[in-house]
Image 1: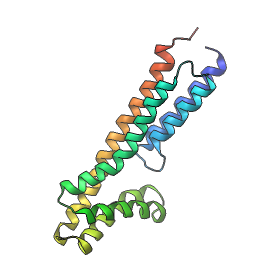
Image 2 (image 1 turned 90 degrees about the horizontal axis):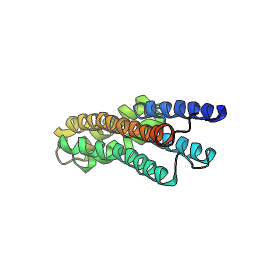
Image 3 (image 1 turned 180 degrees about the vertical axis):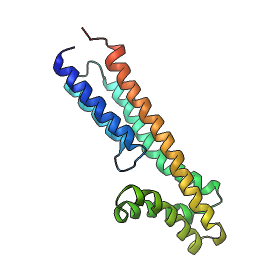
Length: 170
């Protein structure tokens, strides 16, 4: 492998590790970032190691990682007995928390407050409000674990294709 390809590979892996961290700290869109880095690497490398088929798999995984945020939050609220009002509150709280709460604190606290507030004010059983907020938080934690696992798999697929499947290190 030529020296400049090694530099690009090391730089790409560094950016992917930042993306992996972004799956835990939702300030950075982790899985989409990993996909974009793999795409740029594939373009630079002429799609020799990372093919279109590999990019399609990575795109699906990135989409699943993004979808799991929503699904785990909904599942957490529903599991704890919350209603659709709690789910709506959590989603709106997540959006508001990001813009008002300056990133990570807002993304953690916003859905909890939104779920509790909407469940308390609009829900059929307002006493379930705190449980819905707890469900939102537990869903956030579970989503982080799932996003991390998916992103780690994406990086593994990239490494497999670049370093193992296509051994060009000479």
